[in-house]
Length: 183
Image 1 (cartoon, rainbow, N blue to C red):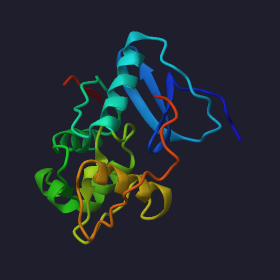
Image 2: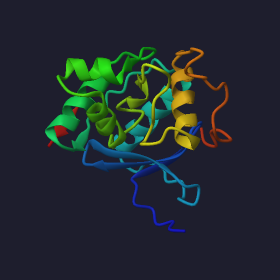
Image 3: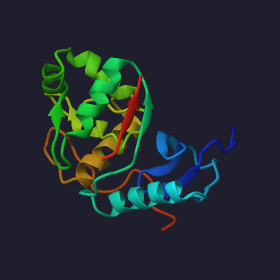
Image 4: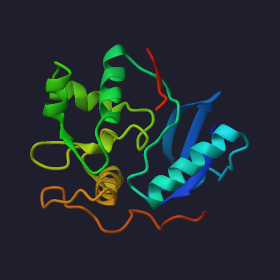
């Protein structure tokens, strides 16, 4: 198991361990990482700001992220990610609704969501299917869907079709609108 730490910040959250990569004063990646990846406190002022905003989000789902992002993706992916950031906390859109606003197809929107490099900050969890919860990180079951259910529940989004969990999918926390999108 590879435990090399390539992240600027690694912190525990109710969803498991998170690894964050930054370039200067921009977030470039947020990954769910294995517990074998060692915790790593922020050493820069920006890293401390990232940590604080993530911790504030987990304490209060209405927390708005104000972190600058440097996301690498196609022009279409960037359009989808920008649209995701306009979905207010506590609300959802279906893949089809989002596709209609982007003059695209629902599958293309789902594919862009799957490739979102900074989930949670760019809230792809707020996009659901017309018949239920949809997918998360390219999966429709397992740990990824548990995370999506938890995030939706954390934001107060409930519904029989979504089967929202009441507990985080992991043991819990151990330690305590500027956006730049580039193609």
